[in-house]
Length: 360
Image (cartoon, rainbow, N blue to C red; front, side):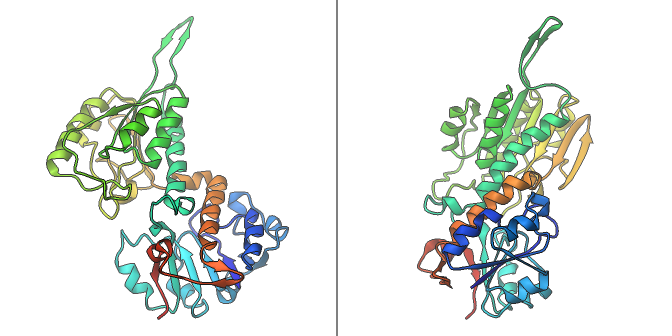
């Protein structure tokens, strides 16, 4: 079997790193890759050829591969150029666009959406959303520090004492926890909000203060995801966020509810009354944002407050992001491919969850 890697059109990452070659060979797969696919991630074509990959054109990769990999979904025209019955692995986010499943069913392909892999212990090594979220949380703090007009740690100098920066994290999932850890390492005073009761212990273990809002709905059956909360709860949360935001210098917003618009936590009134020079990094920008003024993939300034809307900061860490993405994909392929043959056994819960369209 041939596995093909496509060059991303709008990302700096690549879906498979050269170091994957040994594991691919162990699965009985022959690897081909589109020319230039890894250049932006620091993986030139020579690194792939040195690791037994064959360099081809995009059309050749599509037409010759039994398994095709990309990060962003390709066009319908390109889908039609793939082999009948081929396996196509990408990220379709059907929880945001349910119509994509019926659309993909028009093509004679087996389609895997890596962002549908369940967040279970068994599937942890394949969890692309967690891998990318961790990098985004780290980068969000560095991005905030770069735009902030002060420094994070307290410093005592002959010219006076510099107080520590106060950082507030909204949402203590994977991205939020990494943001907490990064901000603490930089010397900030950190506090965090999250609707999930299980987040409290994790937040406090990282040395941050956990801010609780009474009345959160039970999230035990949500598989680690945040759930939709009542209007009454959200109103109480916004009020407490405003109180804390007015004392904060930096806000990292990561709160999202799978398949729904991101909850609005930082209102116009809050931002209008924050300290000028404060910075907000909104990682929920692609689903509406946690902040009133957020614009996806844009940086805006309101009342002297810098608001950075970007849900995919992992792409700015494209070298390590490509390596982690590659590892996640390889771990998934190892349950699908044995001795050069692929089997999409839906009795396996991971495969069943990720397989969003199949050849009848």
